[in-house]
Length: 118
Length: 466
Image (cartoon, rainbow over all chains, first blue to last red; front, side, top):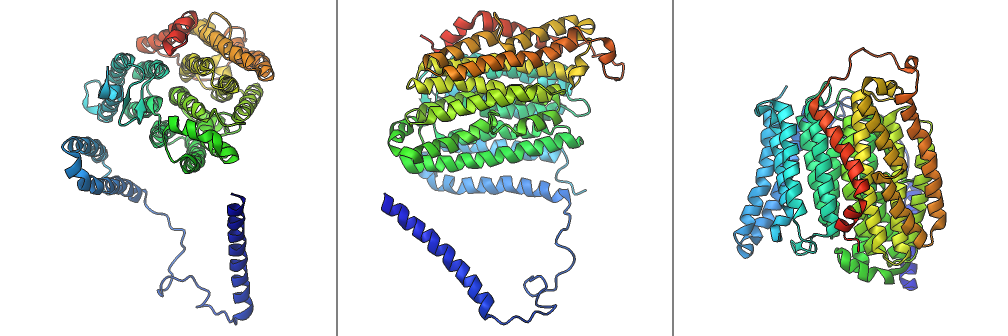
């Protein structure tokens, strides 16, 4: 038991030392010649436009939330489909109840006008 | 009743919540929605009461017990009272049907929580019970203070949930199982790591029950929220939280040192809660600190039960006290929602609405713990357990802080009965509109406070006291 913790402590220690040493060595060894183009924000080669602190329309969040609900539904549907042959008809009803509850949520969001872009 | 009937109350309440989302299609709209939901809760109570103890479904994920049945009845009836009140008062400036739906979703989580005997089900049920509560706390979406409070509640609650999940992962790693019973068998041999895992797990529940030192969210978020939301959030989900904390502590009771953790949290909650409540002028803030203090009293029962190696009396006393605390607390917040948020708003209540003032007196006296009301017997059972377990110092703190608590509860009483009229704050002359259903809700809460006190031995027998 004690041996295990010692191994773990050594692992953490060596990990910390190595990363510190790597950063320090790179700073010491590399030549430094900054220019305006080099120190600008890296965006896969395209020129950065505007500030990153942009305000998004709150409407996006509603869409994201609705999307997330059905994203998660899919995550559940795959293992359900795989297990269907072994588990029998009862899980058909279980999934029907699950999807029904999600659908009620969607209909509610629809009714409240969340699907209209304003 | 057997098998899947066990979750019939959850199904009824969920259906109620789904209907409530479409409350504008019912005749009478929000009022009918709340009344219909209250009726569904009462119906679910009957089904919940018929459950046979010791029944397990879904492979042991949910297990019924006598304390759970009593707790479920209490949760459903308190919700029904709240909905009955809401049906006529509503939320000023907001429509109330979403509040009804959120409350019912939270109740579904709370009901599941009472039966859960497994870590993952427990976590999901706990989140289901609390996430709607964040929305209720920030229900006035144009009120910046309410949103601030709700955000604080959300962030702190999520943080402690994560700490709890971390603890759950330790528990699974140590024991290789997620079932409470098997964890209880495997944990005692795991030493310090077992204690750490247990404490991390309990942090989540301590925060949800606003036990010190994890209570910081409560005063701020209560003081920003509509009082009607506070009435629900500070009582109904807490009932289930107490029961699941009991189940967890039962699983942890073999770990050496766990009673010290509980005793520390109990002492800290009683002292911090009661002393901080003394200076408050906002009733919601005052009741938040009072809630911290009452969680402290509850923990005496748990610490005592663990100290004697798993005394059933301590666990049952804790369950009883949770019920005895929630009824008056809910009722007081409902009156606050009617009359105004500050203590000064209560000035002259005895002349304006005499019977409400006398009912308030009864609820406050029950919270202090004066016979023959519910709170007295609750504290009696708890202190008895503490003394039998040899935790005299903890009981002493309990008794002394109970006396201190009288000081701030009586500030409300003074405002209602004795304060001169000029102390009343300037406010629009509008009287609280008469409403039969809101009054009926208060009367039911008053009757329940007296009945649980007078019939304390009956309630204890229903819980399984021998």
